[in-house]
Length: 361
Image (cartoon, rainbow, N blue to C red):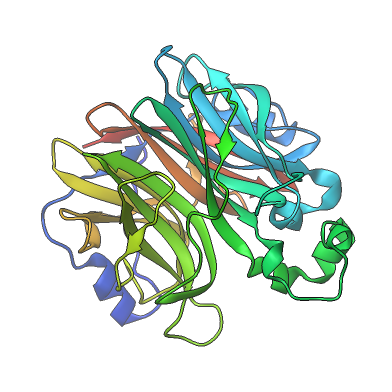
């Protein structure tokens, strides 16, 4: 059994902030996965515990269990020929199905294209997050609203890969959150006519990486933006609520955590403990951190603040340390107990989404 161990961040201040916690919370233990998963990764081969593709970079998995008893996953992918950085301008979101949460997942269809003929989100579809509500499937995602860019470029030119690459920093700041809704896992998904969240108030530049849960008639979202209180790009995460999937979302004034930059949050509610949990990436660290809240407003580090270090334990006793391990997503049972953790990993020029069983202690 792999048990995460807490490590202090570089400064004493951050160490105190991230480890001084109340006794309430939970401990999560990630289980070893078969050693052949790493071998399959190096061959870009999809199998149990892994979604990979030899022609695409794959990233950002979100999974739900549907009425058919099967597990439906949504992830984004983009051509390897465009380079890893093309996640910003060349991603599409696809749908995959499996009998078990660890897979193997079989990719079925594209649900959101990278280029669209109309709408605010003409360019890109990435970082999906699925939320079931009232018999509907709400698929949140990010895309680029190029209508906000004021240039002399023709509209067709702004859709070209070369223009998007040359104007990467500008394009980065056009990222917005959208939602597409469907009655069935395979779609069709109906995109909202406008972004669900745009920068405003205490966050600027971007509105990205949504994580959404539905509870008692309320859609609760955590998302990332740049802090309006700081110069440059200082990434924070904020909690917002709405009574409709398409918003408007009303966001809290204070971020979940602002001592360090954070991103890639996932969120769930534990009915037994009556607490919300969030796992995210605290920039500059070698682990993924876990926070908790009893009221959705006030957040603090979990009793075990490190959800996992950025490595994967194999069943042969070896440790696999990818170059990057990001985009956590936690699949829970009906009571909110974590069952499977999914991570996006990059290693030796390849990427994949990896499924790891979880036990709550």
